[in-house]
Structure formats: structure tokens, C-alpha cells
Length: 305
Image (tube, rainbow, N blue to C red; front, side, top):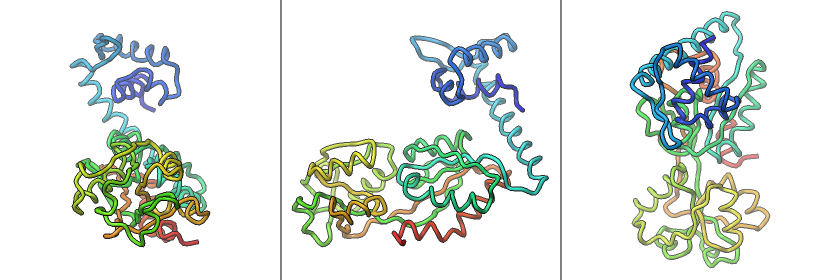
């Protein structure tokens, strides 16, 4: 309903990149550039400064961005309220999730929610926790499920369930003989971890720090951007890692990895985040209500069959 030029401008302004905006909007870059140029001609004002391959908002662009955000939010609210007159819960639900949640927890939950509300279409974005938070705060996602506490004051944060993390290593590693593993026992051994910005990385760093293992005593061997890469490196005997027990149940059962409980135990709250706005669509509210009453969530995180 909103002017397409405003939608395109808003996306470029948030990404500060014509290329990224084109990818997000499923448009060609020339088409995105044309829409922005049309809006600049309409206002007779330059909205972006272009220099050395980078763009930034002009004062006029900052003003237009403020109004564009309000226009797009009101348009979305209007469309949602009109559609709700039918009494149906329907339409697209834009969900973001960090990797562990997206791959091991959400698929079954979304399937169950779809059975309850057949007219809905879930669209899932997978990224690390920090990226998901930012997208929810920018209103490009309706809600997010992340692996660490939220840092955004404008987001509502709700704990979903508890997830236990364990130390994993190759069965050939000497650490595999431990019944439990304390941070001090892990000091000095090659350690493989996720990249900065990962919710799992943040939780583990805090755990080490609060249990007497400072960063300079950690033998950081590798930083890898995916859980599968970490499991592969650990299986190859390159070090130990700390991961959600949910994600390694199969490899442990097959004898490819050994999982050892941490001492003290490391449990984290998986967190649901969504904007604070007073208006909440019927679809979003239905999903939040579903999450509140979902028994499947705890079954999955507790590794129940």
C-alpha cells in the first residue's frame, strides 16, 4: 500500500547499500537506484551522499527516513487490522532465529503452529543473535528467537526455555575421560569457539569469566562461523568446544563425539524478542500465545523423543 519508492528508500537507508537493499527486496540494483532517484526528484533534494563506494544519509535523507519508518509501520498496522476483520489468523510471519534454534528447535514448532493456523506462512531468517536483534529492532522481522539476553532497550524480551551446554571433544581426546569438566580443567587445552556476535559465544565467555577462567588463560585455537564446522574440527581432534547438548545428540549416539557435563552446569535461557509497539497483529499475538503454552519446546530442548 505504501509508495514503493518509500519502501525502497527505507531499505537502502537501513542497509546503507544499494546492493544489499536489492538482494533484500529481490530487485535488480539498477531498479533500486531508479526508485531512489525518482524519490529524490520528487523532493528535489539529495537523500544520499555517495563517496568512495559508500553512501550516507544527507540531512534531508535523515528526515525522510524518520517519516518513512512511521508511514511503513502505519501501513502494516492498517493492513493487519483490516485483515483481522475476517476473524482469521493469516498472512506472513517474519521470524528470525539464531542457528541452533533455527535448525533444531523451530521446524517442529512452526509445523505445529501451521496445523493450528493453516492460512499463515512462516518466513525464517537465520543469522547470529546480534543480527537477529538488529533486524527485529529495525522492523524487518516480526520477532526473533536468540541464544543470549537482548541488548536492545526497545525490544520486549521473554525467556522461552532452558538449554544446557556441554563440553564436546573427540573420543580420543584425554578430556573424554572426564566425568564432568570444570573451567580450570579445560584451561590450556585447544579451544574451538563461535565468532563474536554469536549468542553462544557470549554465554560461554561469561561462564568462563564468572568461574575463574580469564581470557588470557584460554587456549583459543579457532573461531568458526558455524556449528557444523566446529563439530567437524572437534571430531578431527583439533580441540574441544562447548555447544548445546541438543545439537550433538546424534554424533554422541554414533560415538563420533564425546559430550561431558560442565561443572558447574552451564544452562542458558533461549530468548524471544519483539518490538514494544502498542499495536500487535492478531497473527503475532497468536504466535506469542502459542509460544507461552508450547509443551513441544521443552520436549525438544530436553531431548525427549
